[in-house]
Length: 437
Image 1: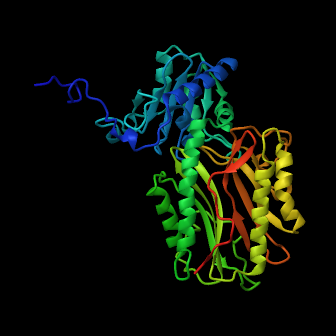
Image 2 (image 1 turned 180 degrees about the vertical axis):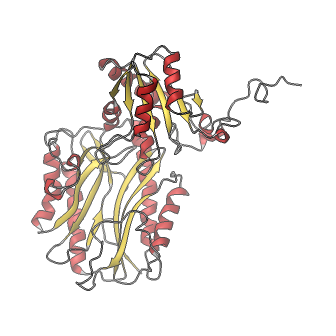
């Protein structure tokens, strides 16, 4: 009879490794690259330990920094302690059933092995004290972005940290992770490419399903199904709208950009003469492929709508032509917007933003300053920032013709990666406006 451990399993028993072949993996070499880069930046800022904070905020992106260094991206959130000279500790879920007989993330990745039940900031502070870091400089790294400009950490967490470690020096260190995530490694680009390939399947599902009599909900569901059954994570970001191109001027429709949940999807049935528009993400191995697309329901789409679509494609082509290493952001966004300006058209978004584990990432330029919204999304102060090889961008091309209709337009966008000689699309969205019957 074999000797048993305290958990009731034979000595030497370990979490199964079978799942590793079914879940996208990043190599240990990629892990070591990231850890080395982070530790170098920690040293330059005098940081003794990073405290990574994860939560299920903003379509699940609140876990990005924690996942970037540990490959644990649980929707339950949690914390991770990352030091210059020791392996990370992850605290995941405060629910005991998620830890028995073992934490599931011990069988889905190989980057970290010390995963504990999450008893809150008090447990993290206790670990810091046990390591002699009660007076250390701690870099706090919750999630933030060019859209979510306020770091996603609760006030109660901050108060608890200060109460538990009154002599510690706490710094904002989220910028360390944001800077590292700007340039994608070959392994990251590989995951983004896989995400983009699945995104194209979702586009095809949108085209196939957007027929008269089908509901918005059916179109939406088939898009999500196409993602999940092909290996994408069940993290849903799909801003979708539908409505009649021709309608009474006394009615204002939201057909310049898709709407977020729960405004969409609805049980509204599609009719001939409708347009369906969507901006959606496809998540694979933690990486997001950006896509924007439009479908006309019926045959013989109005020429004015086709004209808007044509300008969208021209704006995208301008992106591919000018987005090269060494070009400034201002050079790129002016070139991208020129086709719309020449055609006398306007936009609600027209530009690009960094894309990877989160969206939008730095740099982001999609609005004009006078349109409102976060200043971090209109290009102010970053005009001279240069495009670099390894950057990945999502396109936001949401154009309309104000001389025709103020509430109807087209959405078009792909995911592009910047190579040594320019940008290449990864989703390969169709260049013709689909007519679905």
